[in-house]
Structure formats: structure tokens, C-alpha cells
Amino acid sequence: MPIVFALMDMAGRIGNIGYTLYYPLLLILAFISLKHKSRTDGIFGFYLLACGMSILFNNIPSFYNIYVRFVAYILLFVAFTPLVNSRYASVLRMRSIQYFCFFTVFIVGINFVFFKGGNISAAQQQIYQNVGMYVGSTGNNEMGALGAISLAYLAGLLMYRKQFFNKVWIAVIGLFMVSNVAMLLMASSRSAVFCAFAAIISMIYVKNKQNLGSFAGILLGFFFLIFVLYPFFTEYARGIIEFKQGGDLTAFDTNSRDVLWALRMKEFESSPFWGIGFGTISDYNSWTIASGGTVETGSSWCAALSQTGLLGTIPIVWIVGGNLKWLLFTKKEHDYLTVLLTGLTIFFTIHPISEGYFTTVGAILCVLFWTVQGIVYSLRKGVFKTSDIPLLVINQRKFRLF
Image 1 (cartoon, helix red, strand yellow):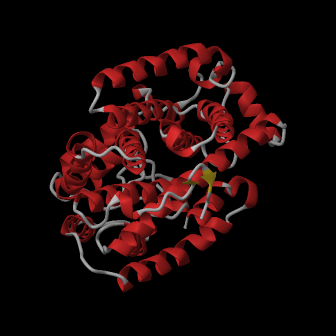
Image 2: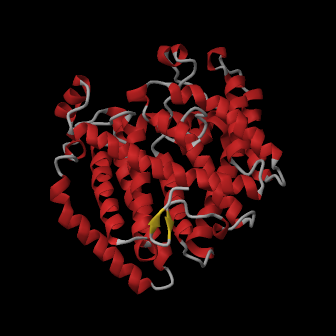
């Protein structure tokens, strides 16, 4: 699955082969989960029930193809969440996340190499010259997210460098961090930049929460490093610094999201219990119809309220809130995978505030959100342990992918 995701993220370069493979693979993974099923977790089923009720109790326009979308969404949950669970499935999902993070480092880095080598289209070059934005093989919001995720992954490796790496590999990681920071900034997604900071800080905290003095010292060092290195990255941050992006390209500029958020709240107020309908919006236009129901909600959390009401939002809050509490306060161990999952969970808690993908079954970020939340949920329910997962990259200071 991570390879398919990588192909999807390179669609701007290689075409839509990844998207062609995605749905057949989703079906295969759902079958594997069902084959190894040993338990189900009702909170995920309750959420899907809420989504189904939002469809049944609303008159949804036919162009949304809502029943096809909902069936695909159910397959996603069977394949990637504890709706259908087992130790085998949980370990497979955790390893998939590791591989995705690993491949993402290279995807982001390759796009930076294309940029520095001038191997970009004239249109991309013009956009960069005009507004300082370059997104490579995908869109700005997704490239920003990929940059943040890859940085969290690399930061986690560096936190455990003495356990895992020799000096050569530390230098290699440093080079990748430089390219990934540059791509994160050029994507001009403020929410992704903010979430990258939040994820890394949370990872530092979890690794050092039993020694808050050490946490404070490392945090000060982290901010000092940013202060020292910032001048070297200003050329890549031009799009953010000059504030020239328009509308939906500026996530944490709340003025650009106010209209969408206000619409979602009006939709919620019109149907607070089960919402206006899974995967729908009230302010659709000709583009929504022509694209077969593609929507821009402006926020996953607001969309959860508007589309599925309290009935659908409460289970998500229950899952995410429980995961955060367990990672940040309950779990005592601070092994590498726990620290990595903390960063990813923080990212996929904050980032959806300004990006809508909770119910977008064809979006990579949708799959990642539910997979990460499902993995942490399985860990805290004792379905598997982080010690069950072989580290895919390191073994006795030797690089090992498999």
C-alpha cells in the first residue's frame, strides 16, 4: 500500500497509475483484514452507522454518487481501522505507516532535487516566481502535509540516533531534513508548518516527559537551532512571508477559511443530530457537479459536524481524544514507535482543523488519518504492542529496509 500511495503522490510526474491501483488494493486489504479478523471495535462501527444515517435521513443529490462513495468508505474502514481487527492486521497497518513515512522522505526530497535542477514545468516556475510556491508532483496542501510528516519521521530517527545510527547515516538524515524543510516551506501551507512544529515538540515531550528539565533544555535547543538556520531558508519561505497566497492556499490564515467554516456551522445548525449528509455540502457549484461530488469543506472537524452531526462527531472526538490522552499522559514507555505515533497523532489532530479529508475516501490524508488513529487505538486496547513491530530501517547500526 505505501508504494501505491507513493505513486499517487507522484501523479504530477507519472500520471494516475497510483489512483488506478488504489481501489483494487483497498478491496484486497479489506479481504486480508476479514480473513484474519479476531475482534471488532464498536466505536468505529458506531461512526459508520452515523454516516449511514446521515445518508438515509437526507435527500442527497445523485451527482454525489453517495452510495458508491459510502461503500468505498466502509472498505477503507475494514482495511485500515479496528472496525475489523487482529494482531496481524494491526502489525500490518503499523508497518505500512512506517514504509509510507520512509517513502515520503524520498518523494519530498526528489521533488526538491527536481526544483534545484530546474526540472519543473514552465507553469510551476511562473507560480514560484509570482508567489513563492512550488508543490512538485502534488498539490500545495498535500505537499505541505507530506513535508511535515517526513520531518516528524526524520526527527524521530534523530532522537534515537545513538541507539540506531552511525555518523554517516546521521549526515544523510540531515541532508534529507534540509530538502524536506525547503519543500515544506515552498508548499506555502501555514497549517502544515505549524503542525510540523507541534508534532516535533510533542515527540520531544513524550521522549523526555519523565525528565521535564531535559525536555525544557532540548526544546530551547530546538528553537535556537531554528533561529540560527532560519536565514538559510528564507528564500524558500517567500510564499509564507510575503503572504501573497490567495484563498484556500493559506490554511492558518483564518480569514481565508471563515466563509467555509461559517457555512459548515450553518449546516450543522440546520441538522445538529445527524447532519446534512455524509460527504456533502450545501453550497455546491458546477465544479462539484462536474467532478462527481468533489467538495471543499475547509475543515475536517467542521465537516464532521455539518455532514454527520453530533452522532458522527462524538465517536471521532472519543477516538482521537482517547488516543491523545494515552500517548501524552498515560503511556509510560517512550520507545521510538511511541514517539513517532505521538507526532503523527498530533499532526492528524491539528491539521484537519484547516483541511477537509475525514470523509474523502480517495484522499491519501483520509487513509492516513484513520490508519494512525486506528493503530494508536489498537495499542491502547492491547491488541498488539510496539515491541511486536520490527524496526524497518535499523538493526545494530546497519541500514535495513526489510
